[in-house]
Amino acid sequence: MQKTTHDYDNVFKTMKMKHKRLFVSVINDIFGKDYPLDIKVDVLPSEGYLTETETADGRKEIEGQISDFLIKIKDEVYLLECQSYDDGSMAIRIAEYAFIVARQFAVWDIEKATIPMPRFTVIYVKRTEKTPKATTITFTFPDGQSIDYKFDNVILDELTKEYIIEKKLFPYIPFYIARYEKNIVSGKDLEAAVDDLVYFRDEIIRLHSENELSDLEMTDLIGFIKTIITHITNGNKMEERLVGVMGGVIIETESEKLIRQGMEQGREQGMEQGMRQGEAKMLIRLSQKEGLDDHAILDSLQKEIGISLERAEMYLKQYGKQPV
Image (cartoon, rainbow, N blue to C red):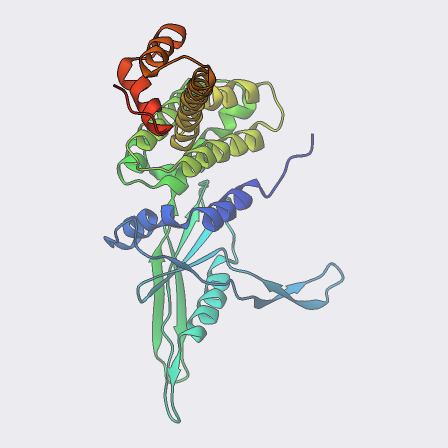
């Protein structure tokens, strides 16, 4: 089975497209903000940037790229990059991204331009000996000035599951299992991985019940975790066991509950409507019989259908008859 190499990127990109709200807590945690989780979030278009690459035959080519995630909250712009492995070109890529973003918000006149650079971070799903704690871009100028453009990176392997839940760092949850990749591939010492999956499953369910996560957010988070598990196991015998941890509980979401209640209410209303229609038809038949006065009609309605005197009188009123 061919291992998919872009599952980490696909999960991250799907989250940013469908669940941008979940990234507010990530911004708060990384940059020390306190935005409310329901604040307006704008996802900016990922402008292409140009970078030079060298082909196998030594030729230089210019190719376009897109950034991972540009998010605007109030007047601040944030650039989030998600990396599964160390990349020696990350600093220059961030510089290119940042200038493209800054250009959108630049202010200038005849003799001066102000270019506001965005805040940025790199989120490392995995850690190696070379994974940097921070990314630094140093700008040097002809007059000798030198300025460091620096932000700390996020290394998921350093975060505990309790911290992720406490801070509501939901976009990190699907990638948490990556720290156990060697164990999963070897099929040995899986107890910690299973325990952590159970923990996240139970916490996701709890947070959904407390309205911290919507139906779709909860469903997608569980689905993203399964995607990463499938990526890591690459079809080996561990996949069924680990995926089963996340899929072992049938959850009635709020939308499903409302649909079920609506169907039950609809059935009850349908039965009620049917009973009313039947009772009305009986009244019409009785009214058409000769020799039956109101007392006889009321008596027949109560005995033959089993309805109350009040309900029988209601039908008589509806058809223009007054009980005596």
